[in-house]
Image (cartoon, rainbow, N blue to C red; front, side):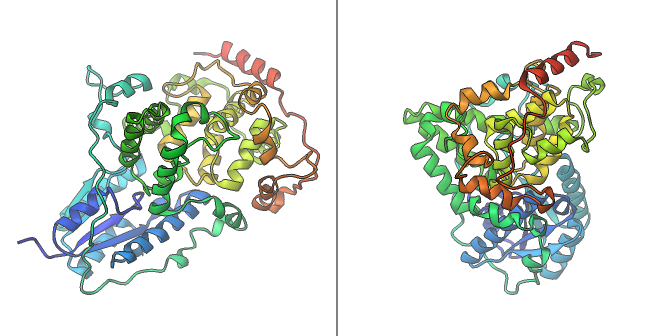
Length: 473
């Protein structure tokens, strides 16, 4: 006979009911399942936009559970204390959760698992955030991969378990424990007036994520190889927002991509490679956690980047007022939508680190504050890749020219006109929305004159190359 004691299911960045190994195991155990989300210090330390988006996602998960006759219990505090107390209240003998891989979460989860076991509870973690656990992918020499292409070759033919469906029923306890109210947490307070601007661009919850995946596979994936580089075109999956919070699993995306590839949609292979790029980021974060806050290539510690955020050039970059249209358009897209086109991310990062000679940590922290699709591994690796200090980086001496990149990828300036109001007689709604999203203290208006470049494309490139040539490593 199955044990009828409750199992506590601790949700984190896995806000879905389908393809959820921990949920499936809890249901199959046969007793009641008590879902819980804990507001701990890791939640409180999130940047403004990621924390706001997390709050929305938690609310959507609560609705999905309610539709199944279940509930999401909300508690605040140190997870070990919260889970022990909840087990004592409910008579639960086990706690299940999906694994996380960033250093802070790993440290927390290790401490929680040890503490729960010491208290006599069954504590189990399950896969769900990645397709390939970082410790299962290694070179022939038994080492971790440091370059993406061989990593891709190593995993591309591996079997990825078929995604599991949502359980038909989630057994409920006879009596539910008390729950805090989500609105009392005020996870979106920091967004202020920006929340109303960004909210229409959010595709919230598991159902929306699945619809987004389906639409992408039906109409866009075939041309993805080229479409993903056109910022003026809706040519990407836009699933980063949902993957970041686990509203969809990478395995669900992977199998959809494989079906599209079997159907002859050639762009699907590039999509699969992008999913593996995300896996590679977590592979590196797991094996070299220093990538989050230190140069991955330690010899870059001697490079003379500026680290003073008070500089006028840094302020202009943050405000989308560099005078470089591609850079400014991409920054403004982030303030209005909470996301940024991938080509734009490369351009703004290159401009900050190379044309302005500023430390990648400045940009990484700014993205952490403003992206609703913020992901600890992808953000860290992306910034170091752009700066040249990271693994699998572009040649450190490559400097993206924001003017020629604009001519190549936005020849008709559709992207620029969508996001930059200054100089237009009839700016787009998106361009005007930027001024509703930003702090009033910036004192900016659509009829301001558009600025001259703070650092020109040629000037910045020459300065960066000179610094690279004279580096001490």
